[in-house]
Length: 405
Image (cartoon, rainbow, N blue to C red; front, side, top):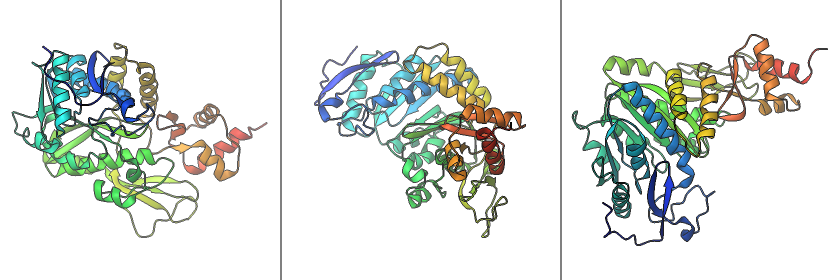
């Protein structure tokens, strides 16, 4: 039964998303328009642009539940008005418990109202508590969750430690980072402080951002004898998102740490490679120039093909507003899952060689006919993930521009 005694002390409105309805701040009353990234001028945070993120999260959590083949529990410690946790409880089959919390008293009261509005009092519990405190209070073995969803405004780094301790063995950690300026190399010192790795301003910096977050997660997990296995990740709009399955055991942690290393990059010829360690003299094997580097970061896979396919299957059974966009994203990711780290931007190569832009499909066709692996990447519509070297890419670009007669 809806709490009729609750009346928000700020302009609000009912919105519908997925299968739920929630009361949220009326953003137009605070001068916020849909294209604004940070609608934080309202007393309770609400971002309609992140509906795509929430849709994809529902799919990923449902895929995880199907794989686990059991009832699951979920914790959302940054709940704000409660829309994420309410959607999890309503739309994901096999959820038996959802704990949501927020340190903001207005958010707490609004979330409680929205839980009541959707008649979820028996499934969703709301706490007025700091995120780390909420997670730490549920770190005892019998209190832990199958999934913890860290979706803060900014960096998830200060919450990884408590989140990992609040997850059951073989459970899932989902984490969002919106602080792309540090992760993409604009504020390198901030990235080193928060994530423990050096970023690099390259054309594939968004992939490096995910790898830095994954590397940080693996390092924090290893301190607790926890290993990680990345099931899914993506870069969309102003944020990156990582879905990581954890496994208890010192041996599992040791195996994870083996995936930590560096990405070496030559800004002269665009050669790049992964390495387990770096040396003072980093000479490019293709042009002899000195290379720069990013890391330590995760050098292993960023996706699990079986999990991606399960998400694709789940997407066929729902009717989200973003279903078509999700289909496109998952299809691109499925094609790039088995290809090497980093990707090339065709226009960056064209600029280096002083050549005109080319059809990306024609370029990929030439690479495939030359015996290379190649696919589009979801990171950039003009990006190609391939096992071809920088020199091979340049040679094939010239062939694409000037095909042999």
